[in-house]
Length: 254
Image 1 (tube, one colour):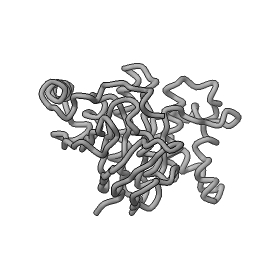
Image 2 (image 1 turned 120 degrees about the vertical axis):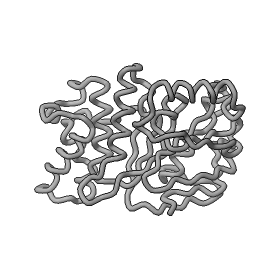
Image 3 (image 1 turned 90 degrees about the vertical axis):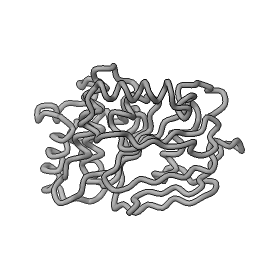
């Protein structure tokens, strides 16, 4: 079964092609990372897949029940508490108020938030706590698919690792009667992709489709640091598919 399929997707901004011939799939319970050079259209692919942008060409097939999205910026409502931010998608989905509190607490716990954090406003939370709140907000409606658009880029190394571990644990945990979620994870960090993913897709440097993929040995959350580092060295040093993943050409793409 496939939860998400992109079939020869193309998109352009103001007549300039950003991506073309993009084909990818994500299966149930699978975390698939999409990496590529800066400016190569990774976020555009995620936005088209999630329905935030209409593709110029190709087809998007979504077989999941409900999706959520986590961005690089937490995008919290500054006038609302953490609990109110987490409850927002539940309110929009018309979940009865009597059921919201329990759903908020469950999502907050999965995201590593403490009960005392829930009454705080975003300005009272650290950067990591704001991102935890954004993740809890995504988890609250119990999605079976989540899009992550470079959510940990702005965090320091230690905090980024904690957020990666949180994602791995949350993806493997069943919430209520729902199934664990699958994810499309956008990143420019190959080490991050190796730690969290079942598969890594590499975007062509010119945006002309997916250059290739690698299935990562082992299971997310069960790979020793030495194994992650060895895979990272092997990919960068000996695998031509990863030769340009750290290139930067911000002028080429919008």
